[in-house]
Amino acid sequence: MAEVVQVQKRDGSLGTAASRRLRKAGSVPAVLYGHKQENQHLAISQKTVESILRHHSKIVELQGDVVETALVSDLQFDPLGIEVLHIDLQRVDMNEKVAVSVPIRFKGEPVGGKQGGIAIENAHEVEVECPAVAIPEFVELNVTGVGLGEHRSASDLSLPEKVVLVTPGETVVYHVEKVKGEAAADETEEEGEEA
Image 1 (cartoon, rainbow, N blue to C red):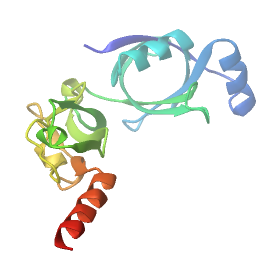
Image 2: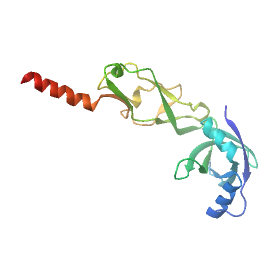
Image 3: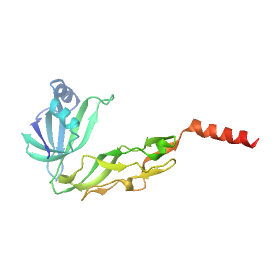
Image 4: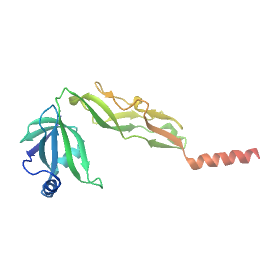
C-alpha cells in the first residue's frame, strides 16, 4: 500500500534561496518528473518526509495540488546526512517496471562465526527491477551456512515473485573471514612446532 503524501505546488521563485526559505518554513522542495510530462516543482512538509524515511516508502500517492502515483527516486541529504534537502519523484503506473535499490536483510548466524571468523556485510542493498506495485521492502539472505573463508553473492538472495536482480549476480554481499591476528598467531605456532 502506497503512502499518501500531501503536496503543494511551488509556483514562482525557484533556486537555492527559495529552497532555503521553504525549508525554514518546515517544508522540503521536491520535483515530480517523467512520462514525457512537464516537471512539477512541489513542496512536502518535513513531517511527511520523516514519515517517508521511517517507513522506507518507495511508492507514494501524491494528493493536494497534484494527484499522481510516484516513485521516490532520490533523496538529497545535507553534508551530515541528517536533513533531507530535496526529493526527486518519478511518475509511475503501478504496473510499470521500475529499477530500485532495496535493503538486504541478513538472516541467521554463520557457522564461520562459531569457527572464530568475523562476518562482514559487503553490501547493504541491491538494485532490482519489478512492477512498481511489487517493490519489496527488503530482500533476504540466509547466511547460516556460510563457513570460514566463504561468501555469498547477490545471486544467492531470495527474491520475491516478479522481482529480478539488476546488481551483477557475482557481486559479493556477505563473507566470513579469519581474524588477521589469529592467522598470524597460527603461523607463528606452526613455525615453532617445525623448529
